[in-house]
Structures are given as structure tokens and as C-alpha cells.
Length: 182
Image 1 (cartoon, rainbow, N blue to C red):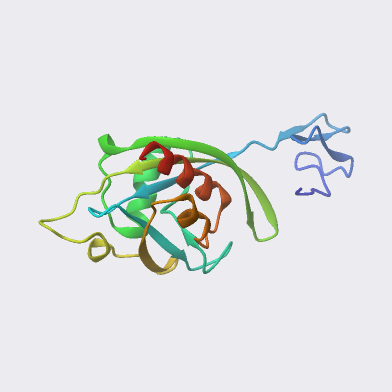
Image 2: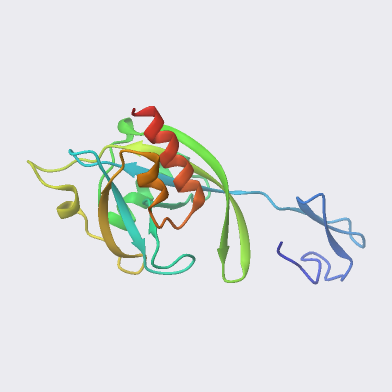
């Protein structure tokens, strides 16, 4: 768990983490809740039913496969965050009306020695492709975030288990998605 040595409000050293959810300062009565951050992921398939994955270009989990997605911005819905993240990372335009909720799972995102508790929200999405264009040909990645792209056929739980996925929540979401599409 993340630790604070000083109260962010008064600077006192009398800050403690309680009930696995908040920091309290006994000197100034300050409470700081450890609320989760909303994050989104998209399951995007091509015409042949292959699922699109990115290879992460930076930590956490650099070199592992991930679904397109990321953190929601303040004052942004999960749907709007999913559409924005997908466009930023891949240049693909997701049809808002095509978003279909799959599942949500808790996750821990370790970044620069800080643990962020997240609620990862997953959607299935359709993308607009031009006349017969292939999914991988339509993608233009943000090379700071994505080092490579690929598609993988997901026909069984073993296919999911064999993927070197960056986040366990994505594995769980793909499992739910697979069951919904059997």
C-alpha cells in the first residue's frame, strides 16, 4: 500500500492508513480516501473474429499484450474514455452506438512505485473501416504507448490463458466475452 509520511493538509507525521481505504490525520482531522480510478479497455475484432492487441511500449508491464484503453479523464464517462483512448492509441474511430458492455473488474496498476487501485471497465466495440480495409492496416499507433500491434484468434479459454497479457483484468474480461459469444 502507498504510504504518506506527512499529512497533505497540515504536514503532521500523525497520518495513518485505516480500514484499507483512507488516510486520517489525528492532528487536523483530515481524511483522504483511497478511491479507485476508472479505466477502460476495448475488445475489437476484425471481420474474421480475431481480437486486436497492442504490445505495451512502456511500464507498467512493458512488452506485454494489452487491449486498447487507459484511464478515464475527470468529467468523462467510461464510454467517452474508451472512444478517446482507442483513437489516441490506434487512430481507430469507434462507433459510440457499437459499444457493448462486457464486464468490470478491480485491478491494481503499479506505476513508478505507486499503486493505483482501478475499476477496469471493458466494452466490445466496432470500428469503421474503409471499403474492405483490414483492421491492422487501418491502425496508426502512438509509438510512445504502443510498440507493436497484432490480432489473435480467441476460440477457447486456452487461447486466452496462453496470451502474455499485461493485466489480469483483461484476461477476465476476455473470458466473459468468449462465454457471451459462444
